[in-house]
Image (cartoon, rainbow, N blue to C red; front, side):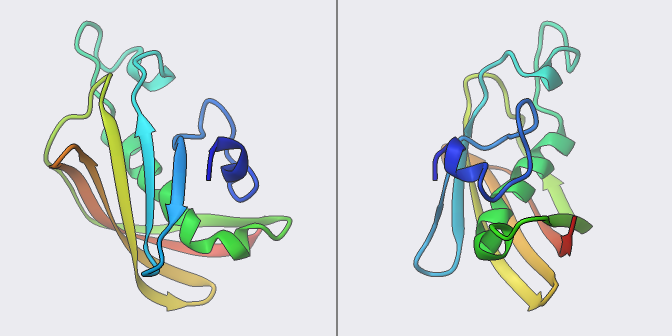
Length: 140
């Protein structure tokens, strides 16, 4: 899915649409990508002269990537995936302008409308961020 296709399942728009492309894998997982350009709003003050992607933005990127797993439900009008929990999140490496992040998401638990996934954000082979994210699929 490119950004236009992602907009069919995600309610996010610029500047909060934080994945560039995504794919739903045959094994039931999802993979998404985001290239840090350096001009993003969240880098403007974090930190001047040494821009680093905030951890909360990395969690948001993982959450948007997870929505690819819920694509069928998300295509219904008025449906949102909202956070219900963020657990076991660890930040291991800084993400900086020029980095191309790969986000891998796999389902852990499904009890509709509640879902839990494990997500990992990597730059190259380096694991930067990982954690378990929980969602409820709700009517907006």
